[in-house]
Length: 427
Image (tube, rainbow, N blue to C red; front, side):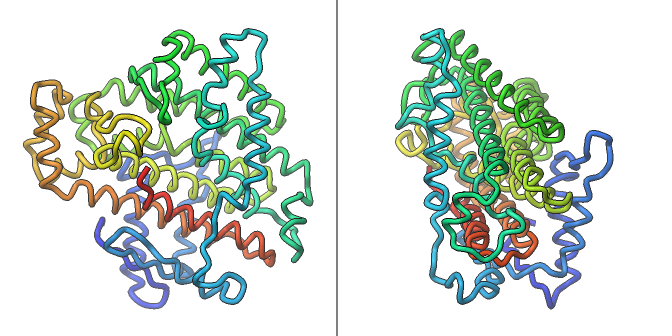
């Protein structure tokens, strides 16, 4: 399941069908992820839609270094986007990101100076982070713009439907506020002292103010969400808040059996990390007026990109440095948190079970776990699983309805390139 995977659309169709059904299990049934039913309990058709697309799938080649090439995209757009051209996703939406950053800082102003200082702590220039989520959402918005004729790129950037674009920008702002609020709360729960290369807010200003600052950001995000006056979008992003809490509780309270379960780990990872990206991408598609099938493709892109991102984070926690991570390495294992590399190592070395059961608390437990991890394929398999989910994200973008706009194609290429950047990043 985690070996090199070659998907073809003309031969080996039985293997392709088996692999995609297995992949669906790895995301849903096998790993315990939600089956994306709506509030009425009805299936959203995502799995059925994906299976219907199976024989139109293009060829993806997974290399030993965990990089992939989208052969189909390059062939389809030969002439408009060359094989050698690399898209810088950030540059496509840089102006909008600057606008969003400025607007975010104004949205969290308050009459109480100390609360304002705390709330804007990670929105200040220099510590605002990679702005990864807003970037993805703005690119998704451009990728799903409908009814755009073949016009110059700058016309699209200005927005043929300014109201729609403003609403999509608002979703990006809400998503970033929810994300930062979750970081503030996580740092309190984890007793962290650094974040993004600086002192964490709880370390600098105390736990109480950090918690209240996170609550304040969530309240401002809720007000912004209500202003959209779209019940379905409100339901989606409100569910994200529930998922964040659920995922944190799953991490805090679990049995030994659950700590040793890949299914439990993936479900928790979806709740804590991928749900925000998945549902925000779907919200972007809903605002764009896309049909249900396309909305689910946007959801699948965000979900799989989010899962891949967290899997790489788990790897970097073992292989990265304080300088590259902006926080100390081995932070998860020091808190007794089991992640994908250790779970894969457990498959090869059952002796790890006892160490995991006591949450690495005995002297020498962490060193022992690292020794087994070094002897195992845990790191490599975690990278492969991240690459697999990145490939699913690419497949979703390739399944978007065709567009004649060169700028739309460029933004879709940027989303594909982001999938590769996620699994090859080192920080």
